[in-house]
Amino acid sequence: MMVSSRKQLDKSADALIRAIKVHAESVGRATQSPEDVMAAVSELQESARMYADAVFDVSGWGNPFGGADEDEDRGDSVGQGVGGKGDIVRVEARYRLLVRNKWEARKLLESRTRIRGEVLSEDLDDDSATDIVTELFRLDSWDPFIYQSDAIDVVDQEWSCVPERHRE
Image 1: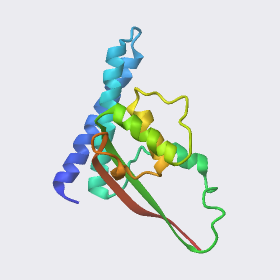
Image 2: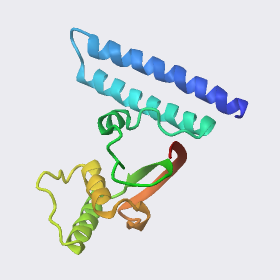
Image 3: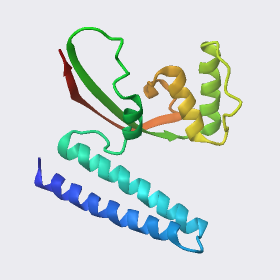
């Protein structure tokens, strides 16, 4: 572990604590300003992302905030039907995407949906880059590098692969 990485981890942890306090203050006021609350939410999300990045840089571990509830809900039922001895390995990947053109991204989604013989959800919000990317993920089992560069680009990516447990 490099000293500068450890300093960055401490710095990002301090920033996250400050962002949590600002968020708590903004939502705890008797008269809440939607602008203040949304600014606090954005700052908290960015601080959490920066902290998760620092954790990964220092330790190689994935996002400490990602999937905690999902894991508890799943318990040991996932993989129960998989027999035999072996190692369970957790692979975590994170991508940041730039949706350059929502209209082109929507056309890409329509094309990929048609190719698979599926129908787009009526709940899809055409103005939501998140909805479009979510549907592409669902359709393609996630390979963002196949998307057109005029619609969606990968800004950055990171991944980790860690042992979870050994089955005997």
